[in-house]
Amino acid sequence: MVVILFLGPCIFVYIWPHPTSRLDKFLAVFDAVLTPFLNSVIYTFRNKEMKVAMRKVCSQFIAYRRIS
Image (cartoon, rainbow, N blue to C red; front, side, top):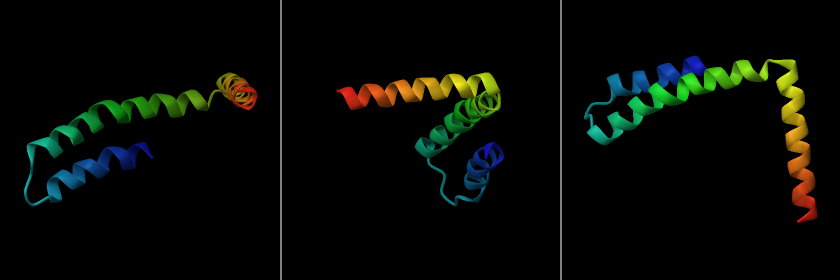
């Protein structure tokens, strides 16, 4: 997933016939910020303790929404 998110905008920028600065800035930020963030999130969720903690948080959130 991270490889696709990293290479997709790069390919799009090289193929796009009329570059616009606004689109280029968005894709640059997307590549520079979002891809490394997703990489760390993916490896965090592979940790068993983190999975258990996230399930607890999600179950508490769902229980809170039912009460409200």
